[in-house]
Image 1 (cartoon, rainbow, N blue to C red):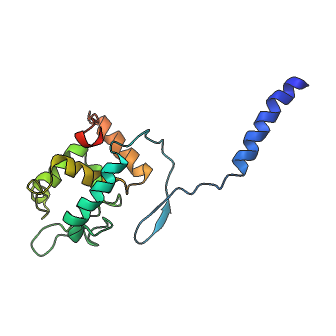
Image 2: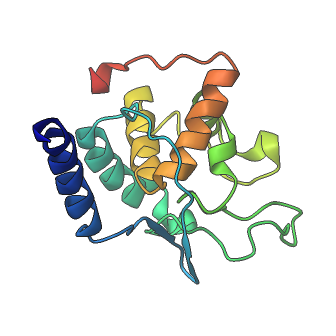
Image 3: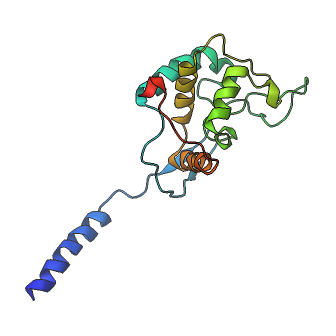
Length: 170
């Protein structure tokens, strides 16, 4: 009888605590809609630091927000070419295609610009250091849900990319 109590009592406590939790608040909100996020195994740690994301916000607001908007939501019709045949600034907040690109490609796009891939974004190699670019990308990715970040992370790993600490996040 005592043995059964030793098993039942801890199990009852776990069930009680679980039942009293506030439930799943894991949602992704976009400008126009809110939809539930599917549970995905969490990555233990993102590649960037909190300090990088804070610095990246300042750099993004100064260099990127005029085109990508201050919340990184981009142009509404970002998939349609403009009168010059160029693609408008896409959302970078996890609601568009930016998360499909590996980190080296994202770095290269900011460094050299978007013209090679059909956009009109200028390169920022003359304004931002490589560490600054990493900070901007950290701020952008800080807007991504865990689900989006995890899919992006797994895609990077599958392509053989290994995450190395940069000077600014050591």
